[in-house]
Image 1 (cartoon, one colour):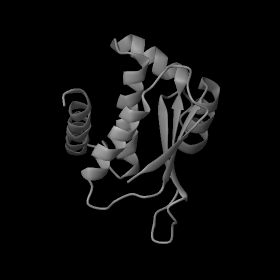
Image 2 (cartoon, rainbow, N blue to C red):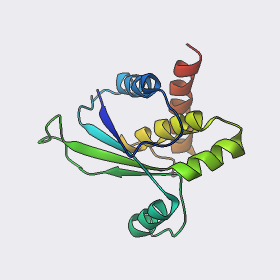
Image 3 (tube, rainbow, N blue to C red):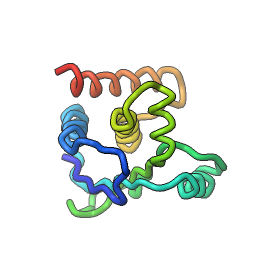
Image 4 (tube, rainbow, N blue to C red):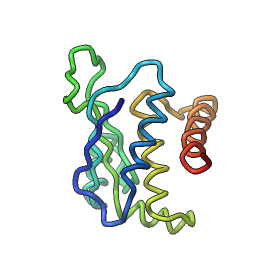
Length: 146
């Protein structure tokens, strides 16, 4: 199963049990088990805009960036950092208000989406979007409609 560490935690509250449940549900749905560390990092608007510009050539603030550090996981040890999710706390708060959610729930939605990205789901075309959206909804429903 995924291991994770939270770096520079946000000011809004979140439940570690829900984060662990998200990882467990996603892990159970995958044939290939993931055993390496995922960093969950929170940064400010300027930092995420700089990262977005540097790595994606998009000069604007985004809610989250996903980084996958390896193409081949064969030689990694369980305590190696394989991925990083970088979240913008201010953007999460703004979107939570905009979508009528608690900040915590907006974070969970973005976390699910981002984890799926790092394990190779995407939404470049409509078919891929439908598949990814279906998996996101399945995870969300397992958390909130047990």
